[in-house]
Every structure is written in structure tokens, then in C-alpha cells.
Image (cartoon, rainbow, N blue to C red; front, side, top):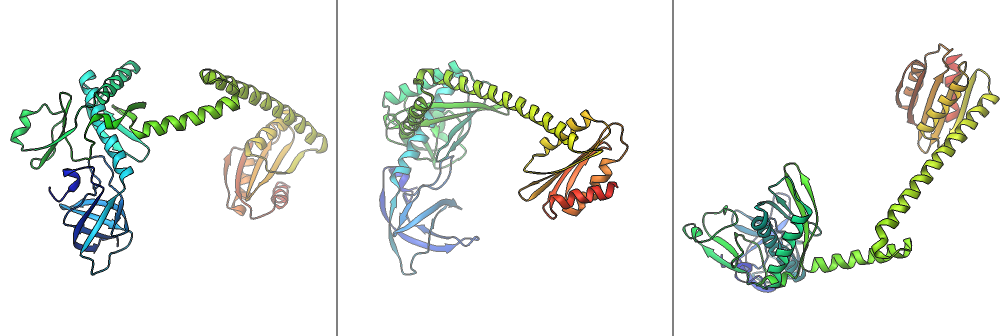
Length: 394
């Protein structure tokens, strides 16, 4: 493990190494293998490091068959033997804070509630653990968060130790280790003992803080979303900017923000209801106007009317006069919408009628003998479609 410098010291930011090989993988991506490296490969729920090697960007790091592959943006010169590497320290330290924070939070859940962690994800913005329980109460969240932050405030050391499988019985491990040799323990004395190959700070105080953000049931488990360290500070700043902006827009102080939003939503619902009623009244007037202008067939072309509007208008027309036929066509951007309806005293088959028209515009639709609708591509003008309908029915 001596070639994995991050195991010796997670704080290493620059290093030199010899190039053992440079190759392309099956997908045509160039990678190099070094005799030693400070780059952490993806694993254990923690993403890989990024940075540079010989001035070239490291875009991915994976451990395959015991070798750590450093994928570069472009290959090194063939003569390159020794290289210098630099870790993106901001990303590395962020991962150290998040990963160590996860250890503390998982240990707190297990100690207080006996909920075991069965999943962990560390993303650029999202950090979650999956707990082996189906329910989680808000009071439990508060207690766990308080314990986790107390452990951080006490600034306990975070130690790493290599042990054999036989020596594992000397430690009260939070979960069984998957490996049987080269076992690395991460230890927070008198609190958490856990097998882990990730990068961690030297003491809990460097994690700074843990904040649980949300939780939800996922099948028979609960997924907890949280944030640690500098992410908490950034998150607080982002949320504060949003809140300050909302206080100005809503003209309400922060403590009254929720009620102000509720009032705004209720007003919006009332306005939407009033608008729907107004649209209904206008459609009724429109239906009567169409009947006044036409005799036994009400045929009209519209622009940008939804199929729902056409259907409602057609129903209003035949409800007012059961002896009419209704043919509506609307052009909506690159689509055509059709509605065909008949009053109760008519016998024409609307489903058959629209079935003859839709193939002309690569259309689809449906309905029944008295009311049918459909839509298709703009392969004909709306006026041509209407004329086809009138020709067929006559």
C-alpha cells in the first residue's frame, strides 16, 4: 500500500512518480500507471480525485486489477519517464469532510436508534446514506444531528490503522469488512470503528458541521440527504440569498415567508378559477354566435386552439342544437387538430368520418359514432381539411 500515497497522508497535494506504462483502454481513452500516486480512485462511495500529471488534466482515476489508472485528457510523450502530479485540493478536502462526516452520522444513527447504514453516495452536490429502517421521525433526526455535531466540536482524532483479519476481533466494528487482507480501519476513539479505504481529515473538528437536509422512504429503507463542512456554509449562503430575494418580492419578513407564499398560492388558485369561469362564459357566447351564423353544419377554422377547447366548444354547440353537425379544425404550429361532433338527432358516423381524414395528415385519433377527435402533421391547410370533411359528408 506504500504506493498509494493518500493512505500514508491524505494531505499530500503534490508528488513525483515514475511512469510504469501508458496505454489505451477498450474505449480509446489514454491512461497511465505510476509507481506511486496520491490520486484517489473511485471507490467506497467516494468519487475520484482530479488534478494534473505532467501538466495534463486527470479526468478520471480507477483501480482495475490492482492497478490505479490515471486517465488523461491526452497522452504523454513517449519519452516521459518521471512526472509530477498535483491534486485538486479543494475537491480532495471536500471529499474528506463529506466522507468523515458520513462516518460520524452513520455511527450516530446506529448508536442512538440502532439504524444501520446500508448505502452511501457522495456526489458533487448530493450526499446521502440509506438506513435500514422504513420510518424516521423528526425528533430522531434532531437527536442524531446534535450528537454528530457534538463529536465534531470535541475535535476527536481520526486515526487510520492497518490490521489483520485476526485483529478485527479487538475492535467493535460498525459493520463487517469486505476484504480479508490489507484491512484499513478508520477510528474515531470511543465512537466509531469502521473499515474504509477513503480519505479523511486528521480530526473531527475539520469537518466543521453536519446538517441533515431531507429524508424520504425508498422501498423498505430511508434515504437521508445531508451536507458537511464547507458545503454547509455554501448552502447557507445560497439559501440566504434566495430568502432575501423572496422577502423583497413578497414584501414579507423571513419568519412570515411561508404564510406569504400560501396567500399568494391561494390568490393564484382563485384567479385561475375565475379565469376558467370567464373562459367558459366566452365559449358559451361563441357557441351561440356560431349557431347564429350557420344552419345545419357548423364548420370553422381556428388558430392555436387546444383540442380541449375545441371539444368543449363542440359539446356546447350540440347541446344548444341537437340537429347540427360540428366540424372544427385548428392549426397549432406544425400540427393540425380536428373535432367532429353531431347532435343527438343526427345519424352520421363521426368516428368513420375522421378516420378517412387522419391518414391524409399522418394523424391519430379516436372517439365514437357521435363525437371524435384527432391530430396530425401540417401536411394540408386547415381550410383544405375542412373542405375534405364537408365533401365526404355531402
